[in-house]
Length: 181
Image (cartoon, rainbow, N blue to C red; front, side, top):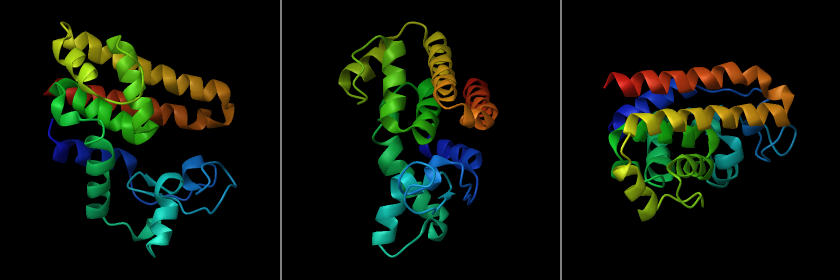
């Protein structure tokens, strides 16, 4: 899958502006009530980008679709080295990176590839992904690891259970889109 198509799908999953005070990502401090409630737009969250945007004289609400596309390409797609991976993994890894963070996505991916889990997609991870004999099976294993990660979040913080169905729907959509190609 190309970056443009993956971006279109991720932005569709992320939606437009939200300032839900129960969503930790909407706060500049990264947890409810910590810092400023700036919200999230196109999946660009206050906990990650709020302070930098404020320093540049912008807010989350000011983000354009082009701004989001540039941020996602630079900070997610390129960091996860999606163009270097087999096509079957690109959209899933990118979407997971946007929703869970690039280090977490990389660690989940590395764990199912059985390579050193350091949260950085490097040469060894890319070689392992390219040489994996059962690409579709590994893809399924990655989706399962991603789903299990969400379960662990809810176990640690049951108040986040309200988001669990939406998270699983995202994984299901990633699977559907990827396997229809």
